Image 1: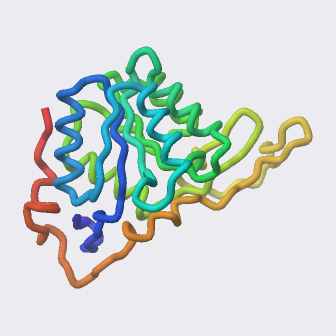
Image 2: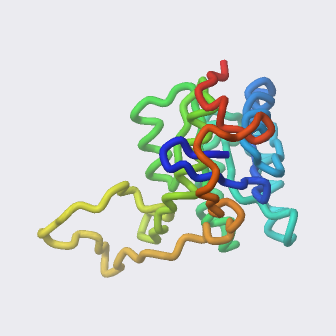
Length: 218
């Protein structure tokens, strides 16, 4: 997959992605998009419950069974994407706790986005999705990993997307417990960040390609 902005080419064939959505049609589309972008292994879950089972098994196995990124629908039943996200962030297994999590929703209003953000989501993807939007979420995870914060009532990526000068009192202290920054576990995804500057943007062929990054998925 190539980045149109940086001109870098990314090999994503070493990644394993879990897609959790109770809509089979949406799952089929997203799986096709991810494979078209060069993702090496894509697993599917028909519900949040099935996703938790798959993720639990992945923590007990090494190598090819590891899952690197989760895409989950917000409005699944009986376990929705928000419950799945909170389960992931509260998990005792350190690798799973820090896994990049992309929430998807056809009703991506401010309330839904804020709930996901405050539950520790990594990226949010509105439906109907486009190939470009899926690619941009992957590149955000690869190119701009945010440090994780462990604080009273919150565990997840730093919710601030930018660092601005601030001269006031540090209010990130609650009941004697200071917010701590933790190193993101996304270094477990080395195949993703291998950049090949010689490959210009838009020069990728159809089997892993960036040429279709403006194509809209209905």
